[in-house]
Amino acid sequence: DTASLHPVSLSMMALQIEPPRARSRPLMLRYVAVVAISALAVSFELWLLWGGKSRDQEAPLGDSVLAHRVGSWATENNEESRHTESLEGYATSNASGGYDVEKKFSSPPLIRGDEIAGNRTQMNNENEFESTINATVQGKTRKYIHIDTVGSSWIASHSPRNHSNPNRDVRISFRLHDPRDVPYPQNFLSVRDYMCMVSLLPSPSGGTLLDFTDFTTTISTDLNILFIGDSLSQQFAQGFYDSVLGEENLGSHVIVRSFINGKDIRTTNSGLHICSSLVAPTRGGGVSAYWRVLELMSKETEAGAYVNCKKEKGWLGQDGKKLSKYRSFYYPSNGKNALVKMNTSKNNPATTWYHSPPKYNESEQQEYRVKRYDCCVLRPQHGWMEIHEITRARIVEQIELCNTVVGAQTVIISTLPLNNNILTPADWDGIIAINGVIREIAQSWKPPSPGDDGVKWVLIQEFSNFTNQILWRNAQHIGYNITMPDFAKNDGWEKEGSEFLLHRYRGIKHRLLQHPPSIPMVCGYHIDQPFSTKNETAGMCFFNKISRDGMHWCVETLGPRYSANIACLLGCVYNEKEPENVEELHMCERECNDQFMSLTPVDESWILGTNTTILSKSAS
Image 1 (cartoon, rainbow, N blue to C red):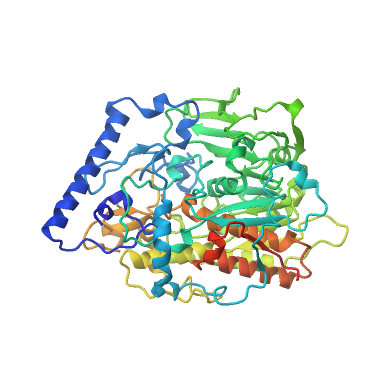
Image 2: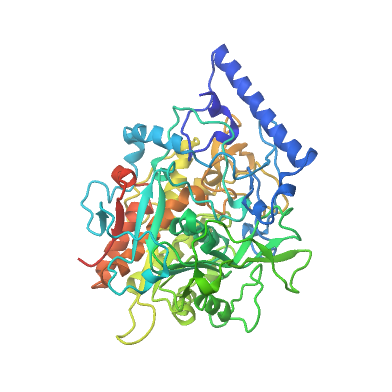
C-alpha cells in the first residue's frame, strides 16, 4: 500500500483507505521512498515545463487541447458572471513540496481498468455503503428497462441509411463495458482544466473502487440529439460523443466554431471552448450536437446578428438552424479532423477562433442531412444566470423554443446540482426550489393537439440527486461525522443536515477564484491533521475525481452514467412506440433515474455479457 500515499493517487473515486497512522520502520522507509520517487517525477515534469523544452512546443496544432494540468484551475473568461468560467490556469504547491504540472493524455488513464476488475468482488461484500443507496431498482423486477442478450436491438454501423429505416422498433439502445475494454470518455474533452487527475503511481491492490464508476457506456441510436447550454453542457455532450462514436469513426466529429483565450492554441492554458459541434453520423445513424448558449433562451434575448459565444448571453436562431441544416458525407475515418484557425476579423490578442472542417471527398460518400432534432437536452445555466432569473416562465419558453428553432419534440432537463455559486443556505433552498419547478413542469406538460407541431414530451434527468448522493458519501469518506440520509425518499433529504455542503475549501488562493469550492465536492483525502471543516481553517486536501473546481464535474468518471441515463430516458419515448400516457412515461423515467442517476450498482451481467444490450420502453 505504499503507492496509496502519493497525493495524486488518492481520491474518493478511486480509493477508500484510512489516513496514515503510526507505521513500522520498514513501512516508513517505503513511504519515504515513494515520496522521493514522486518528487523526482514531478521535478522532471517541472524541468520539461519550465527549464527544458516544453512538450507543447513539439505538439502538432490542436494536440495541446488534449493536455492535462493536474490540480490546476482554469475556465473561461467571463468577468461579468459569478460562474467559475472567469478563471485562468495556474500551478499550486501541494503538501509534498511538489507543484502541479502538465501531463499528456498518453499518460496512464484517469482510472485504470485493473483497479476496477480487482475490486468488483470486494465491493459486492461491502454492505455498509450499499445499505444507504437508493435501492428502488435493486431487488425488484424491472418493468421498463429490458435486456437483450443476443444484440438484435443493437446496430453497430454508423451509416446514415439506418436513420431512414421505417421498420426500426428500437431507436436507441446501449451497452455497458469494463473500462479495460472501452476506456473512460476523454476523446473529445477539450478544456484541460476541467479534466480530472491522472495517477502518476499505481494504486495499492487493496484499494476499493466505488462501483458506480466501474463501467463505461456505448450507445447505438438513429436519433438526432442536441445539447444546449454552457460549459457544463459542453463537457457532458463531449462525453456523450464518446459513447456514440466508435474509434474507427472519429472523423465524424466536427467542430463548427470554437475559441481559445489567447493567440495560439500551442501555448494557451485554458484549452478549447466549443460554441457548436456535431457528431454526424453516430453509431446507428443519428446525430449528436452541442450548441453553446449562456442563459435560458427567450424571444426577448434573441439577437439579430452575430453572438460572441464566449461571453454574450444572447442567442442567434441562425446558429441553431445551421446545426439543423448541417450537411455531411459519411466516410469512416479513424483520424480526427485537424483543428484550423478560422479566417475571421474577430481574432484578437484575447480570443482566437478555430474549427475542424471535415476532410472527406463529397463525390464518393453518402450524403447526410440533419433537417431537425428529435430531442434537446437542457441544463439551466446557473452561474451565468442568478437564481431568481431561473423562473418557470423562462424554463417553459426555452422548452417551446427547442421545437421552434430546431424542431425537437422531446426535451430532457437536468436538475441543478451543488456548485460554488451556492454561497448560503438560502441559495441552496433556491436551487432545490428550481428543481421542484422543473419536476412540476415535466409532470404537468401537455402534448400539442393531434396534427399540431410542438414539444410532446418533457423528461427529467435527476442529476442533482446523483451528484448529491456522491457528495454525501464523499463527505463521510473524508471525515465528516454525518448520518447518511434515506436517498429513496421522494423529497426532503437534500435539505436535512446539509450545511456541511457549504463548507469552503480555502487551500488555494487566487485572485480570479471568486468563490472557493465546497470541501466535499473537491476534496478526496485530507492532508492537514486534524482536517477542520470550518470555512476559515479548512486544511489542504488532495483533489478527487468528482470535480476539479467546484463547478465542473469529472466527465471521465460521471459521464458513463450520465450517457446511459440519457439513452434510457430517450428509450422511454422512442422505442417500439410512443408512450400510451404521461403516467406510464414518467414511471419509465423514474426507473431510468433510479438506476443510473443514483449510486445504485448495475447488474454485473450487464457489464460482462458480450452482446448484452440494454433498452428501455414505456409501452407494454
